[in-house]
Image 1 (tube, rainbow, N blue to C red):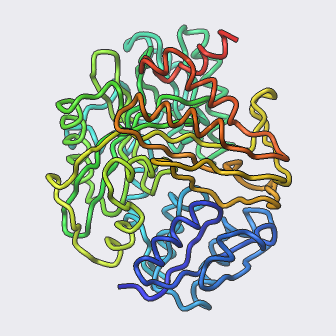
Image 2 (tube, rainbow, N blue to C red):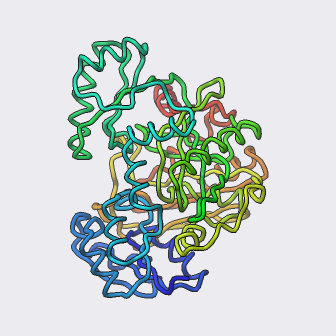
Length: 448
């Protein structure tokens, strides 16, 4: 087992990793920028090392400084959290070559899954359903038009190295394809330094369904059920739940088997998530794989009772997976609302500033993952996530009721947050009935 682990991240996920390390009896080392000097992850870690000024490029994205901190601290392993360098294969490779254990999958597996074209090809070869499309980059509009014409509109253009909705455009006509192809290519080059694009058939009213996976170094892979992530805005998730209201036990087993099959085919180790689009008839198609812990991992922990971060650490330390597929049971229903420091009335513009009052909801089945407190100043340099509100009920109806009550009790003064927007979601009849897809927010906003 590791003696000491460095967390190459900040905020609530850094705290979450610290909690798991403490329970495993492992010392924690936090890194922080000048802007995060008073953050809770710095206060709660066993050791803390300042690595640079506020800019992410000079701190949390600076591989050389992170490795230097790990060497100075004498750690055995590095946990990347999510975001920043968590899915950067170069970082994982440098960690490995520097003599540390990377708490995540091997760098070559991460590189394969990070390339959307290669990932899709690998899943197709493994027998996992994939969306109709091409497995090679498309460089010119004329070829894109021919492919779309043979496939039939609408189609979706995606960046090969993409994520978070960047470099992604929908085209319903040849004219839209011509315009959107140029825009997507420019955005892909600017966001990822990689202008490669590919095209897939676009599903009109898809659900975003993802399968949580755990795999060890000995070829054992299990799934922990699905999460419904259809409540999203501009391809950014806002609210997630487990299990999905559209997935029954038979379909869960079918999607889970496909995800496990795909993960085994690439030799996946650690916690990871296979993401699918599902149509109205229950047909599902591989979209991408996230080779890290997810922001929404707590809802899976709530319904399975399995600590995913602990499992990540144990797997990286060479332990065999302690669970078999038959050990995994889904109990109750959990929902997570991401509370961001954003102004919903100003197109969700970031709203950094000082929190003057912070009151968390409580009661049965309520969990808050957060790094903020009254008096904390949210810096303008990083992600706007303030807290994750996670609730669990005996069933979906109770979970929604508990979520509504918790949102009403959650008080954050001094800044604007997305709490009022979440309340609109949970009061919407389509959400209550489970009649949701990835266009839910667009429809809700049009209703006013």
